[in-house]
Image (cartoon, helix red, strand yellow):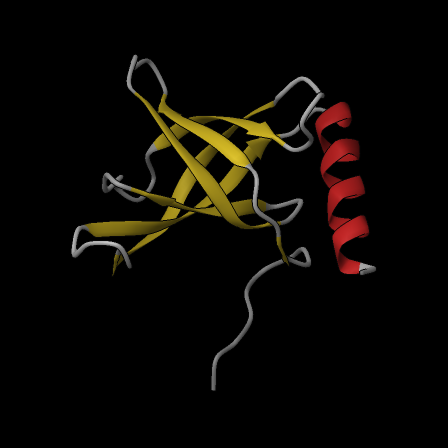
Length: 116
């Protein structure tokens, strides 16, 4: 039996996201797989280590400014890309700090998606 450890409801939601190691210049663009007020899952071409601190830019809606949050990698699993056999990494990131604005914008997206 699997015990659910998440504190917030998670919804399937795809949006552009940039993930960057704190204090590094490399940016890893990708798309979210799912999202909640507590964090997100993103598939990356590069494996990040658990507990790595990251900076995230989320483009929740097309014409809105991106949401900038910090987070910490909590889990990583390897997967194969469908188009080719390259290894990709599903990466679970827990948000570390959310401003009130970020919390409100995320909550609006989660509520909208979950009510559909």
